Image (cartoon, rainbow, N blue to C red; front, side, top):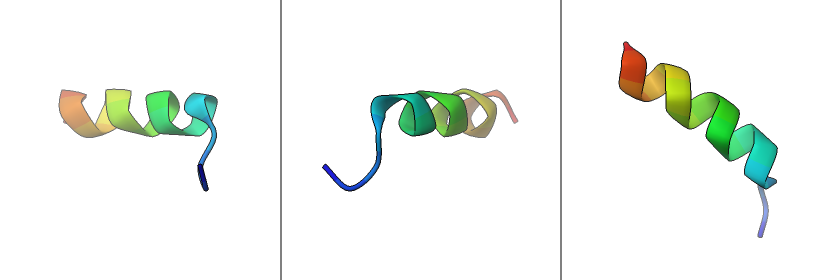
Length: 18
């Protein structure tokens, strides 16, 4: 994968929260 799991989870959380 290009992006790590931490980056995906860290960006998916705020993205869904907003």
